[in-house]
Length: 227
Image 1 (cartoon, rainbow, N blue to C red):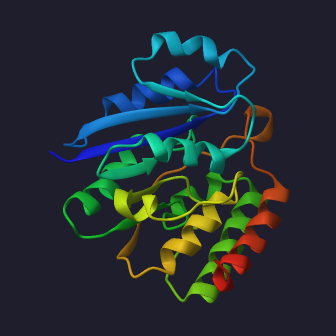
Image 2: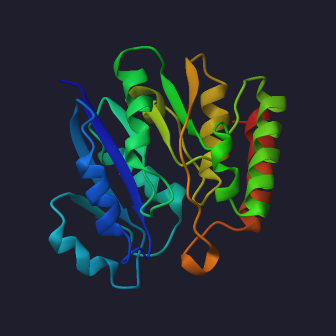
């Protein structure tokens, strides 16, 4: 049986972590399931929850960012398929059954869950975030010549040997454009499927900001022509 590794970077998610884990646990992917949490030096009491969690937890001694957390998680991942899950409730784990299935049945090598492919999600975005995602995805299409509607999505599923074969340098949210750029430059079968989305606001703990958008632009340009 194939194994699915679910990587969950965690930073200050005491209020939501147990609920998202419950949702992940409840989904039957038809595969063996490995859940790995990477705590990026949480300070809000999140670490107190790990005694209740029967999964592998990796720790950063200082806050380094999502990209760094995923690098740490990838080194420990043993699954045939790897997917990324944020430790909040913006995404529904039921939605990535389709992503995983397309890889496990050898239809695709890399599958993204697109929030922008489903017009019902448009009212669930913060306006600035919605426009930024449209712009960054358009920029990705122009630079890389691949049809893609949601470059910044969390739900990215990979055949393990593909993502493990990529050197990831980004420490923060610029992981998203870096991994997308490097995947699209490879000769892999890439697909998107629509997913639902329910954005949280900054005062609810959302961590990505406008500076990360600027970094994403530079990363898309950088990795198109270098590395």
